[in-house]
Each structure stands twice: as C-alpha cells, then as structure tokens.
Length: 533
Length: 33
Image 1 (cartoon, each protein chain N blue to C red):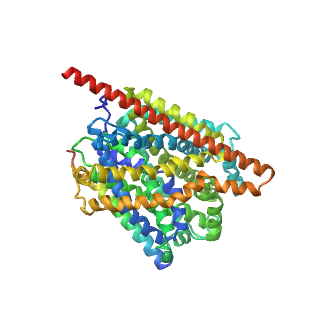
Image 2: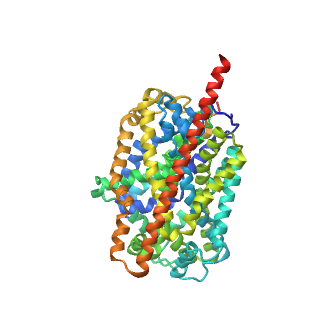
Image 3: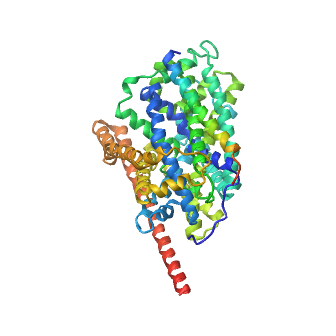
C-alpha cells in the first residue's frame, strides 16, 4: 500500500474521457497521419490502420485502462508499482515499469518545446509577423525561430513549462480536467472550421490554383497493390501506437484514479474513438487539401519530402493562410496553431501526472512540489533540445523515448497482462463495472494477436534500431562531406551521443528511485509485521 | 473526386464519426454508479 493515500480523483466522467482523449490527441493527429497515409497507399492505408486499431489499439487501451484501475486499488499511480501489483512475486516487473515514467519525462522534454512553437505561432499570427511575406519569408521565420535568433522561442518555451507546472499543481479535477473540458471542444471546433475551409477551397479563389478536394482525392484514392506490403502494415501499426499514446504509462496513471466499481470499457472506447475522429476526419481534411489547393499534387509531394508534416504545418500553412485576406489569415492562424497547442498541452499534462503520482506515492511529496519537480526536470532535460535543435537532439529524444520505448513497454505490459497476470483475471478486470458489453473475441485477441502484432512491430524495427545505434547514415554522409557540412555532421554525432547518455542516465536514475521506493516499502512492511506480532 | 476515393473517404468518415458519437452519447447518458 502506498505510504500516502492521495485524495486525487476525477470530477466528472466526461472530464475523464476528454482528458484521456486529450492525452491521445496530439500534434501527430494533424501532422503525421496525413503524411503516413500519403506515403503508404493513400485511401487503402485506412484499412490496415483501422485493422491495427481493432487488433492492437483497442486491446492496448483495455489493457492499460484496466491495469491502471487495478493498480489504483492498491494506491499505485505510476507504472513501476502498478506492474508490480500484477505480478507481486516477480520483482523485475517494476523495473519494466520504469519505462512508464522515463518515456513521459523524456517525451515531455521535447514535446513542451514543440507545444511552445504552436503557442508562439498563435502570437505571431495575431501580431502580423507573416503579413506581406512570401513563402520563403514565412519558411525563414521558422528557421530563425528554431535557430534561436531572438528571445521569443525561449519565452514561449518557459511560458509553456510554467503553464504545465501550474495546471498540474492544481490536480486532476482542478487543473487537468478543466483544461480538457475547455481545450478539447475548442480543438474540435477549430478543426471543423479549418476542415471546412480546406475541403471547400476553390481553384481561382483566394489565390488557390486547385480545388481542396483534389487533395482529398489524392489522400483517399486507394492503391490496393500496397495493402499486403509489410511496410504499410508496420506504418499503420506505428501510427496507431503514436496516436493513442499507448505504451507510455500515462493512460495507466489517469485510470488509476478511478474507483474500483467505475467503468473502463466504455470510457476507453469513447476516448479512443474520439482520438480517431480528430485524426481521420479532421486531421485528414486540413493539411493536405489546403497545401494541394495552392501547390498542386506534385508541389505538395515535393514539400512533404523536403520538410515533412511538421514543416508543412509551420513553414507553409501560415503563408497559405495569408492568401485568405488579413482577417481570415489571423482567424485561421489562431485556429490552426491554437488547435495544435491544445493538442500538445492536453498530452504534456498527461505526461506530468505519472511522475507526480510516483513522487507523491513513494516519497510522500505534496502536489505542488511534485509538479514543480516535473517542470524543473523537463526544463533541464529539454534545454539541449532547444539549444541544440539543429544538431538532431530533438529527433534523438523522439526516436528513443517517443518511438522505441513505447513499443518495448507495450510489448512487455501485454505479455504481463495476458500471460503472467493471466487472461482470466485480466478479462475479469476489463469487464468489471463495464457499461457496455465487451465482445468476448477481444479476450483472445489480447491473449494471442496483440502480443504477436507487437512482437512483429518490435522485431521488424530491430534493423532500424541497429542502424540508429551505429549511426550508419551519419557516418556514410561524413565520408563524402567536406568543410562546414562535415563539421555539422561531426557535431550532430557528438550531440546524438550526448543525448543518448542523458536518456540512459535518466532511465538509470528512475530505476534507482524505484529501488529505493521498493526498499522503503519492504522496511515499512517488516515494521508492520513486527508491530502486529 | 473519383468514385473510389469518395467511397473510402465517406466510408471512413461515417464509421469513425458514427462510433465516436455512439460511445460519447452513451457516456453522457449513462448515470453515475
């Protein structure tokens, strides 16, 4: 049992569902999904995508929600001891649970910076920074912003960290839930506005050269030749992972504040499908249709290859909004970057909660100092991603914490839930208190198909992981590079290695804290036994 | 838009919006325990 019985809890059920959906909805829903669809078969991508959602996404949501509520019964609010409660006789699982804190801190370290770009761009849209600039000029604003040419990036980053820390210090019902109740409806409202603008874009109006529907046409035209390609299925499985925020430890933490008799099945389905709505319906109707409207299919494809989804969102869309006239440009800029900001902050708040839960449960910290500790850790760890952004520190964090770590943790937790804890008990947990009838087929999917799918995703990723470890691409580039370019590659290799060292140190430090907490628990237990004797 | 793209788009939008509304309305309508 935890040393401190926390009084945290959710105020309303709708608040919980919106907070969970907010945790899942992130910038990737708008910037990553459409690019993945284009690169993997267009309209036919939706088939492996939805199949992966059914066979991997929904089962993982059920697993993580039920693990969280189960651990919460014993007063655990972070994954090390939630996992421990599922297999109390096997002491190593708590160290697998370290991933559930590590990922949240490491992802928050770069994600809060990304979030601050969105906030900064809301301000720049209102203050008219993009007025009168051509595409190159708008693109250069981004290059200068991330190149830290002025104080603005630091100011908005610090503002984001302070905002996150303040909201977290207000607790679940007083902070996180309130932000979700305001942020999610606003995000959906902004998204619907931009989607309507994107789809209704007409050639010859507002400077557009093509209809927005041509973008939709390109995005959704199925190429069934690709549907059996393992690469496409791997991309679909990967997208489901990132979009649902599974394998992070934040869902378990949120669910651990549920009461024993509360439903998890309906809540999980509602939050999961809401994320899919934002991604498929809204995310698919903004970035690509608007870009195609101005650059055509070939121009959009060239831009995707050149700057990716993130580049399209920050380097190109502000310029396109300028073509809509001064007032609409401001409204569209605020809507686009506002929705990205809300998508970001509802996710970063979810990353802070497990860290706070761990400090509160295991070291009896109060809520305020725990939130402050999270803010300070994210500041220290995030500083390299801000200062050395151009040397790939941001991408390195994203690769190890935001990609590899998720798959590793999800694979282990599924094996633990289905095979160690046992599917019989696991299934009973899932359907306990359920407000919907969960199809029994999910029991067998969780037992067999989900672990196999996760194993396949993990083992298929191993060659890529090895290439990343050995820095194959950078070393090859270095062989042909000369002068300043060679210097930059050398610096990138150096900063990549420093990033890895930082992340490894973070993981080991958390594991050490888990060990100390475990020892404390053992000592407390033996004191109780002696007193009782 | 060509017919196959329209079918894929409308089909996906209908399925996803339908499930989202169904589950969210159920959340709103289900009384607290």
